[in-house]
Amino acid sequence: MSADHVSPAARRLYGYAAGRHAFSTDEAVAALGPETDGALAELLAAHLLQRAAGTRDTWSAVEPRAAAARALAPLAVRMREAQEEMDRTRHRLEELVPAYESGAAQRAGEGSGGLELVTDLGAVRSIIEELAASCEEELLTSQPGGGRPVETLEDAIGRDEAMLARGVRIRTIYQHTARYDRPTAAYVERVTALGAQVRTLGDGLMRMLVFDGRTGLMAVRGADGAAQNGAALVVREPNVVDFMTAAFERSWLGAEPFPTTVGPDLARTISDGLRQTIVRMLAEGVEDKVIARRLGMSQRTCQRHISEIMRAVGAKSRFQAGWRAACARRTVEPSEPSEPQEPQELLELSERPEGAVEARAVRAPGGGGRGGRAGSA
View 1: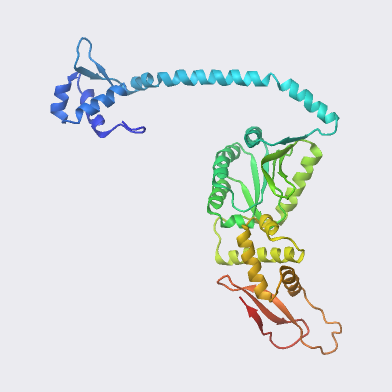
View 2: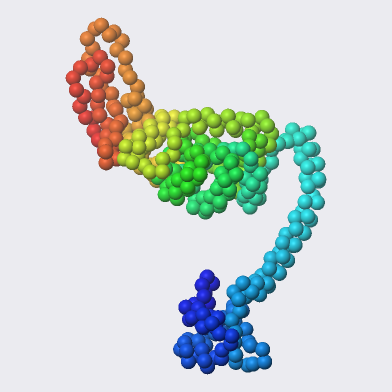
């Protein structure tokens, strides 16, 4: 017998046994063939056959529900013992709740109330599970960094489905790059079908969760600005939670709905938006690794975008590329509209259908004629 099914030979033997008050092994072998010995052992192990009283080689069938009760009895005992051990452990640890609450009140008096730094990943996950289980109205989540890890999505899906089933609203913001991640898109399709709302934004997200507008979790960053894995700041101070909620709402207003499928037109729109954000950061002198982290993409992908922008505008440095591309997006106003002026050319970034970036020279307002191409990549 496998873990999930009774073998075909055992099924045949059980059917044979159920139709008789009793049978011998020799009778079963003669009727069903040589596989009977193995099937007999399988049914005996599952408590589906029993030895007839006063015999050594005569058997009768056992009703399946009775067999299940007998087979599961040892497991039921172990489960009961495990539950008792869980209850004892919970009682032993909860005896310390008054001490913790007293310490929390003392910290509040010293000015650190409402903020708790948790550096153990297991403890952070336990806090999230507890808050999710008690959440009654709304969960706000902001998750920068592109696509979510598969194991994170697997942990979240059951929890989120349970909250949605009991009427909790869920709103989530990812970055645009998450749209291209298949596991993340599959997760979004599943939870939005149940009523969750998911949007994406290019930049400016803070990793956080807010439960019912009362408790928040915020990512903890190191000296290099990168998030510390496994660490979170648990926030219960009302003013700080209000600030987190307001920051989420501002991002939500500027975010776009997460589509479960990304067509060519939408892909070009998102790609152009990402490139313009890269241009802005280049002009500000932001480093490649910081740009990549803020946009939720790998540093290699980010550097590829930067190289394409540099070729398109004919720049020799990152800063020059950002400056030229930024200038190309400004409209040049003529100083004297009434007087003829020499045509001025601006660089305009555009994207070809196949995804390449090109720069075109276009006439500024007030100029005449058609623009010529400045170069493409």
